[in-house]
Length: 563
Ligand SMILES: [Zn+2]
Image (cartoon, rainbow, N blue to C red; front, side, top):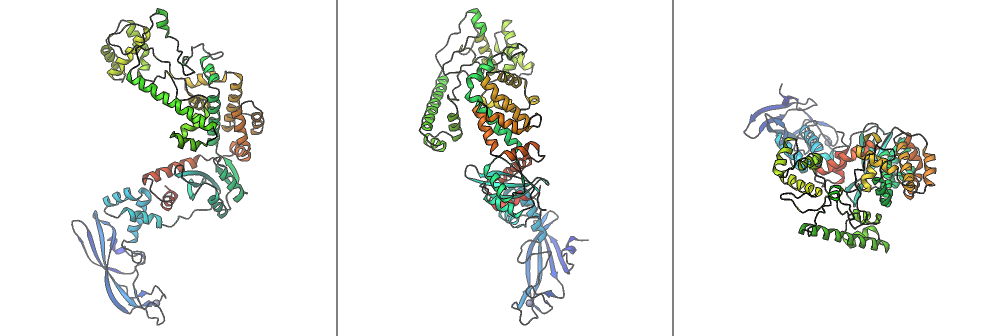
């Protein structure tokens, strides 16, 4: 049976007069043969024919070609004398909407493509599938499609997201029970959220990040709902507090990292002492010191001079930022006045020395893993870097010859032995000490997820001086609370932290206190804001797949569609 015979779902007859293929299209000639038609204005059936006319509409493809339906349809006279519509065209419900140039089923296919791919990509796929249409039409179909009905939500998660970072934000509302996006609301000031919550009085639990506007909106518009702070954000805020603590006490931190862990395996610290201040006071490498052969320093190369000038400029910028801050200027104003990125301004304001100034920092190379072999080779009297390169390649090393040659030069320099064609004889710099940020991430990780190096670092930090210890112990016990692996209660923790010496933990506790009920719920509730973050990622993907040009309505329509 030809699918054309099922063109009209209401069963009204439509005669197929011809069907033929051209190289680029399929064409069907159809004539409407129903005896009567219903007046769209008054609903009276009429058999008083007025005239006929032709109409061409696009349909789903046939034989890999776009199918055009050439329809002969009729006009009728309305039998009701008082009907304002004296003449009307017969409708073809189910097949065509009035004035449409595509059949409803083709429009449905276009709509599905638009939802899945958006305008431009959808346009390309539709052309390939022999149902060509413009990107604009696809997007119009998406925007025009009605919202899918959703059962009233009980457990919702909310978060903010950026339509344009720093400028325009929105709020996303998720049904946690069904894992679906319920709505995108404009702004993140909580006003739109209040309206939404009032329209959905059945909400029982609201999970959210620690954005105060959401907390307030939820408390006002949905007082019946339990609020749950997001555990991920709690840990994030905790990590930031730890980072600030470690940055403030960088002196004590570096001392602790240098020390042997109490009761450790007696292993020497892997991070050798690093220069804390701007002046380099590195000790000589042991081999050079023992042989007494001092490496000779060459005058700095053009590249080194350039690097030093750059660092010098950074220090100047740092001092300028600090000065403006001391004068009471806002962070944004400083960023504007100095041309320094806002993130860097924040970093400069927090640190008591220029964090970019990291003398002697040495980048890692994959040859570090072969240090023992290279040293042994040098010890055997090896000097020809090409020989070594071949040997290392045989052992699975993927560094290039030039990297090997430079590495040999550095190792020879560090042993004080003259090499054949070595680069500048500068002792290898000590690896950079881990930054406060790196340490804070290591600290906040689950103990079982830490790498060996991170475990050693954390042990040393925890064995550090008393002020450091206090802050870190508090942080560790809060992380355990969030992960439900610790004993004790939030109330006890807050009391302890509020009385602590450590300023960062005090202010973290104060911020928790403002949101205590939701934080307490986060430590006990099963619902969490995790799925919301996933949906925000999906939202970003959809936004970017439309090159960031999608407007609110289009974005909302595509994000809301499940899938
Ligand atoms: Zn009528």
